[in-house]
Length: 168
Image 1 (cartoon, rainbow, N blue to C red):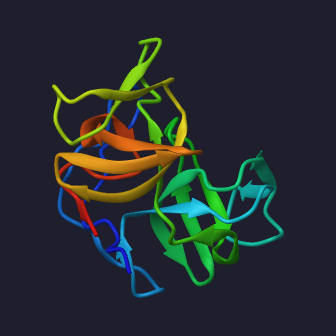
Image 2 (cartoon, helix red, strand yellow):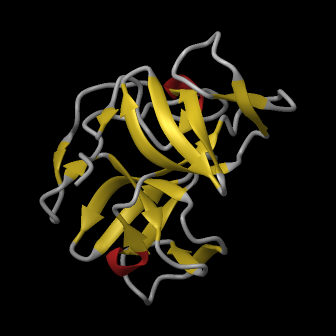
């Protein structure tokens, strides 16, 4: 099983996450903060940790990464790639690790490398905010896949994993 994040994401606006020590463990027993993904195509994000709280917005794509920043019983306060926060019921979240390719980037495309090396052959060009499956990270490079294409991206351009985080 993949290890959950053990570092704190600094406030995200247009910069990638910055590593720090975990705040502790939540009601679930898992580290706070940590990255998870959405397990449904329709996920309501609420103002507070109950079904009675108003819906702030709705995610409409399964698999998107979110960062759990706090827990309250069966509810998780999450932060998205834009830095927005709200509450999601735990049943709508998955431990599956996914990421977004450099959502803060203004570049047209970013390289997916055939090997974990900056000089390696480019396997594909990915647009910013492309959703990828994270297959593993060594602290510098992550093995990812997007559809039928797989390769390596520098960990610093991936939102959904902490800097220096290692995933098996």
